[in-house]
Amino acid sequence: MIKENEEAFEVNTKTKYFLLTLLALGVILGIPYSVGRLMECSFLNIGSLKADSWMSFWGGYLGAILGIIGAITITTIQISSQTNQIVLAAKENDKLERKRINLNLKIEKNVELFKYLVEIKSTLIKYDHLLSVMLDEQTELIVNYSEHNKISNRYIIGKFERNPKLDQKNNEDLKWIDQIVNNRTEKINFLKNELNQSISSLQALSTNILANRIFINNNNYYYKILEVYMEKIQRELFYINIYIQMEEIKDVEVNIDIRKSETKTNLSEIHELEQQAGVAYTKYMELLISQIENSENKDTDKI
Image (cartoon, rainbow, N blue to C red; front, side, top):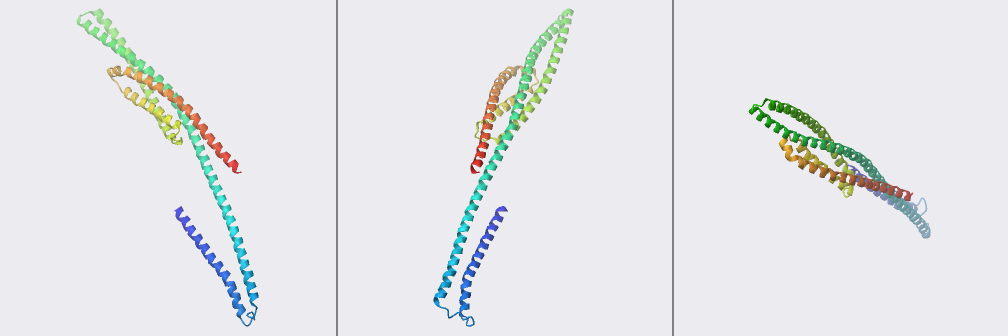
């Protein structure tokens, strides 16, 4: 719509200039024609004037016209040149202003992004602690189940042998180990709930960080290190989610050592990436600030 309006305006302007040119030519040619016709009129007695008077008139008339045309041409060229300079300067200033606005937006968004990085760091610390405690509790629970099985076997043997004392002792031990298993299972379930909350927070923070990553030049190291950082966190969250869903103690027993080893490796790599992301953030912010200062210096030079 805007383009159509501009084209219409341009056509109207050209038509206007064309009509003005025709009018000017009409005036220029019309005046001498009218004068000549008047000189031929008998009642004005102009037709008897000498040829040199007629040539003098034309010389002065055409000289004045050429002088006016020259003055108009020079003035038009000067105005056009000045207008072009003003337009170019306005475009350059607009370009610099847009660049500054864009850079300021990037700085604002990257400050916000860094806040998410700080939150994700503190959440990862909590996550690491909860997961470590839960894995330790599960390790102990596996031991408790093993003891429970041993006591259960002794209890069955004691009843089979009709040994009241052994039967009573095994029965007491079973109650004691059952209580430990129940308490430990309850604690593990509590830790799982806490872990799920940390996982949800980490997933939300990861999403926010990836969403704000569009305000970083995609060829910058900071952009790339954040991508690797978030991928590593999401990979850890994916596998811990699978692990947390395991309810059978035999499944936990098979996978717990693998989970401990992978968690240790993953969190170590995540910690390194976290430090690299912090350094990259500082360098990228310095780059943005230097670009703003350079654009301001260009404005100063023009003044």
